[in-house]
Image (cartoon, rainbow, N blue to C red; front, side):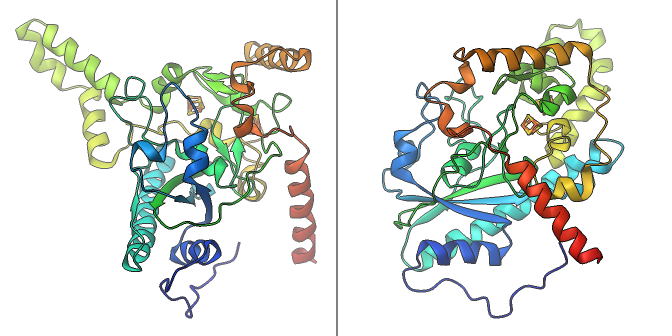
Length: 349
Ligand code: SF4
Ligand code: SF4
């Protein structure tokens, strides 16, 4: 997409803004996509009812959640190592927080209390600290911005899973967007995320969080805890040597710029063929998946057979289907690719 200068006529929100004005302002401030979810709907449909990640548990006054999407530039996924994506992640999160903060401030200046939720923080009391206060991917689905994929990342039609999301909780009543009911993920016949996942953590519309953490949170909280326990248990004479290790260096890097503490592995994001950014910058480079093994191909076959047999799958229960897309896959990626090629032909010609 060519560089587009900021619209000089863009102005802060005024009066009592409606949903269209709020979303337009979010894009002017630099969000890549914006949608609105109703707090009542989010309260009624917590992703995991055992641990309700709902606005009402945060504030009883919230009426709407403005959901922002910030894309991770595709260039970083073309690099030889994961390090550029990790650094871009940090920059993207910083930018997203600034955009969200400005939008929340503008709403509040107009008399509509608003605040931003931490996009990446988890809560100690929610499922042993593995859940955030809200699930930003589910916010995105409820705000009509995408649907969950086989590896339960949110896939936006525009940028696939190469995105971060955040939510602005406000007491202003805004008209919510409609959920996408068509499945954006191609599903079992694709399974490229499964093929690319180094620890084989992609389940059937689910994720083995512990397995994923070995790659995606190499220096996350659990690793830090285990390291500290090893140091405490070690004989006194060995402790000093244990401190000069790659582990401790990793924790330091994590504190400095979050690298290694989350989102450390970009493989399932890099190979997902959803989104024009994929067609434009990644299709050729990511075509071959070096991590693909016969074992993973047989898992894919089992996924296909299970889906065909109509067996109830944990990730596709009547409750979960809402976020995957009730209508099933209807070819959105093929349609997008067709449109993309048509546009390319026109611009080449
Ligand atoms: S982030 Fe990496 S380890 Fe986790 S599911 Fe994706 S590919 Fe697998
Ligand atoms: S790689 Fe394929 S199966 Fe995996 S999330 Fe993307 S579209 Fe779905």
